[in-house]
Length: 312
Image (cartoon, rainbow, N blue to C red; front, side, top):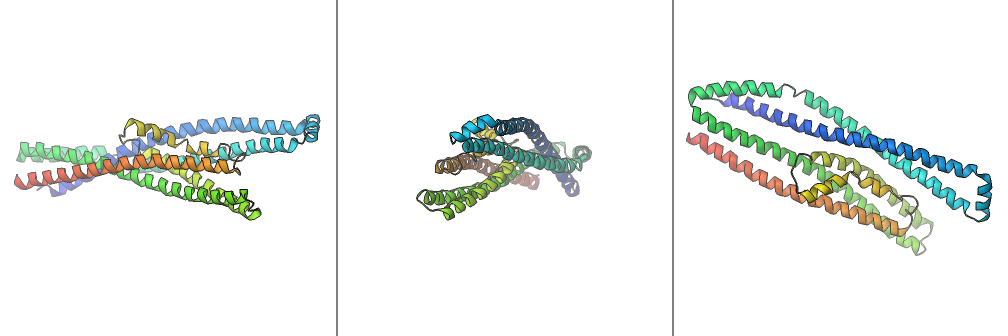
């Protein structure tokens, strides 16, 4: 009797859930956007300072003469130049993140705009079905509506969990790639220390370049993962770890040039990426548990509704 109306109501409820999820994601993305804008502003200020320090060093001719006599000029100039490049790298990464976030926000806004009327459509369908059910059997209508509300809540929660899991898997894939490249760099670095020469040095830096590229991707994916987790209730410890995700690349880039060729720096970077891997794994384990629970709730509630309809 109500098959067509039920179908329209179900689609309308799904649209409302999606509309709400998109709104939550937009809120999180806009918050991240504001933080990145502040970060970019601070980095621009820092870059001007580092460039000024570098220029001042080159202009102080008398001081340069003394430094050259002491054999320290080249090392100091190299250090000042490395500081400039390190800040530029952070600034470029921040600008990339800003561009990615703005693109994501635009896409979400367009998608959400297409669902603008979903709540009004649902209300109209709901009132139509309510009137029809009330005319047929008021108790039946009340019980069925309860089932539908429970199912909608479970489905929305399950969709959010699955989206978060997909985002987490993408992060893990890039983390594993970064680990692989850093391990290779570690091996070539060991050979370099033992006298491997030019080949080992070139191979080491080639793998470090690959690792840096993977870290750039990880940072973008962590922002997405953070957003997907925004509406899912996790325990307090995991929430703290999640808030730290978006800071990962900053720690990774610090000291990138001054100590990068040193084996101890490669080792510490491996430790950093390993800790991140463990943190993401813990969140994924929690999501897996939540998903299985939600899937069980969905199956059980659907069976209860089916039995009610069949036996009514």
